[in-house]
Image (tube, rainbow, N blue to C red; front, side, top):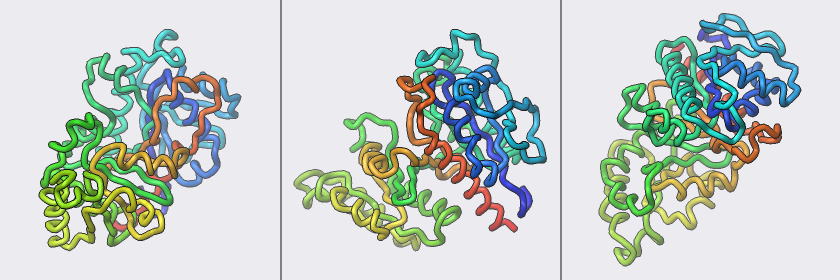
Length: 338
C-alpha cells in the first residue's frame, strides 16, 4: 500500500450457514467501507449471491484471482472463490463439515495474503468451531489458528469499542482451569503484547489496568493468593520495563473508571470477566482484534447467530466496525513506515 492508497482488506465469509454472508453484503453496501479501503471477499460465489438476493442489494460479484490494483466500481464486489458448496452444505442454521473445511480455507488464504503483503489486513466473519473441528481442523477458534499460521507464540485477544478495550490472559478455557493457567509468565506476556500493539496501532503510551482474579484482589489471601503471588509481581515486572500498568485492581469497580477514560485498556484474567462489560457497552459495534501477530486481523465480536440466518435482519454494525478498524490500523502502520 502506497502512502496515499487505500488499504486492501481481505474479508473472510465465515460459516456459510450463519449470518456472515449477510452482514458482509450489508457492510459492502455502506459508503464508508469503500471510502476507507479496497475490500476483497474470500468465500463462495453461490453463498455470496444468495445473500445479495436475500437482501435485494444492488451489488454484483466480480470474481478475481489476484488483488486488483483499482478500487471496485460502485456496486461491485471483489470475490476470491475458494469453495463451491453443495446446497445441503449452505443450508441456513445447519453447519456441516464441508462448510467447516471451507471456512478453514478462507482463513488460511486470507492469512497468506497478509503475510505475502498482497493485502494489508484481514477482517473475519463468524465461524462455527464445531464444524471446523468436524472437518479435521482442530482449533478452539480463529485466534489459535492464526497464531499457528503466523508462527506466533505470544498472542492476545482484544475486544474493542469506542468506550472500552479489554484483553484476555486466558481465552476459551473452562472456568475451573483458569486459576492454574494464570501464571506470572502468561500475565506478563499479556501485558507486554497489549502494550506493544496498542502503542503500535492506537495510542503512543497506553495506560493499562490489570484486573485481579479474585473478588477484592483476594482480601490479603482470604479469597485466594493468585493476586498477591502472581499478578502483582507480573505488574511490577512490567512497570520495571517502562510499561504504564497498574494492578491488580478489583473488577467490580475498575470498569467504571476505564469507561470514564482513566485507562486505555483493561487486562482481564478470563473470558467472561472482560467480555460481559465489553458487550454491555458494545454489543452491536464491538471488534475482536488479535494482538501480537505479524499481520493485522480484526473480526466481529459475535457468533454465527443461526437463529437469524436467512432472515436478513442481522446487524452489520460489528462487521462494519471490524473492517474500518482493520483499515485504520493498516494506515497507521503504513504511515509509521513512511
